[in-house]
Length: 588
Image (cartoon, rainbow, N blue to C red; front, side, top):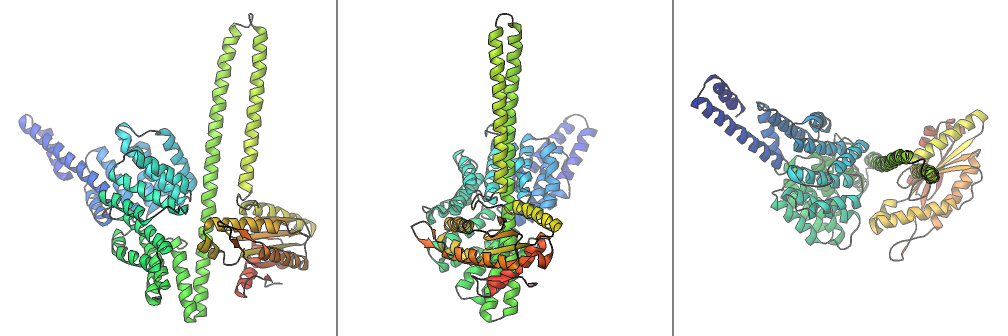
């Protein structure tokens, strides 16, 4: 098509009169046809990804003559790279368009897609900054940019869902749904509204809500990626409400359609969920096959959620078969994947808080700059009337100085509050992992200089995932708060640093403690945890136990990571030895 347009353009330049005019019109017709084809492909990318990938490659073989069309084709190619899981390559194609695309709508679409890709490359802080900038630049959806702004709102909902912020995700999705968007964006809005309701354990959620969302996607001809993710969400809902069989039937019915999308994350998640459901149904061989396919599909993301799910299934299968070596291997991989997911969760939360803090600082700086400008203007006017109103001028200057002092105090108070947020875990009130590491490293350095021993006590709540599974994540949060209060109430024999270093993992550094003192303190903590009762929704009391691992500078000098590793190994020996016990390190 492109080569024909070039030929016709050459004829138009060479021939004058009616023939040239006819050739020029033919070239315009071909340009319009190409533009329509690229618009069709953009709508096709989540409906029929295979056709989208093949057709965009064909178009790239003969680039269009016009800059705007070449840029749009580059945007389509970036979408293709993203669908195939090559996020870095997608970013390389789309970032220049976000800055220099000829069409303003394409610039906004490219900027929005950059945010999507930052989620794929785990650049959460950069993605949040881009999102904040674009949302402030486009507060309303109107004029030629209306659909592009709707897509930006859809992306905001997706990005906040990825960050684990369901309330913000739902707000942007509802905003999009209320704006009467295109069928495709209506599908996106309904899907993420339901996903947010599911994440917040909305008890009013029902099967008909999923059916309405699916109808919205089918109306948009979105029978690919979105319908696949919706099916998996629906299956999890069915597993919780109607049982394993109903969920398994839905996943198996949708599996071929999900496979056809070739979207790695969706396909891997479908295999992992199918493996869990098949194992629960007693179909061990099929469950093993599905788990292995989930891991193979996730080979570029070995610490993803599907891998964690699949490795857990394989661990259970090998354990049931009596294969201790295989069970241990898969358990270690499952723990590694879970730990990576927890670390990523902390990274996401840190990114959210950092960018939120930056946004607040910018707003405060803007407000302060506005007040300063107003003050300067007022001073200029007062200077002209100084001889007539000197007393009023003095009073006003005094008030202005007081206002600046107040603003300075507010900025200082905000800085103190945000520092506390960054250093203190909001759920338990203990030090965050990063702050614990900073305090512990400083204490160890002082101990090294003074020749003073230190001991590290690490503990992990036993079978905590079961609390979340049986009672919900709100109950899990209540348990964590109760445990943190219980352990803080245990008197420490020496100065100590207490921190939450993982989801349900904690650590205490005892300054000047011997191995015996650390063991006695750890035993007191263990008893306090075992006797603590968390009251959850419905008035039910939930109790947990914890497994402890000890190490000291007599084992690993004054190196924090070495102490953590030794305590971690001792902790897992306590787990394997029956849980609810204290174990010293291998060296001890």
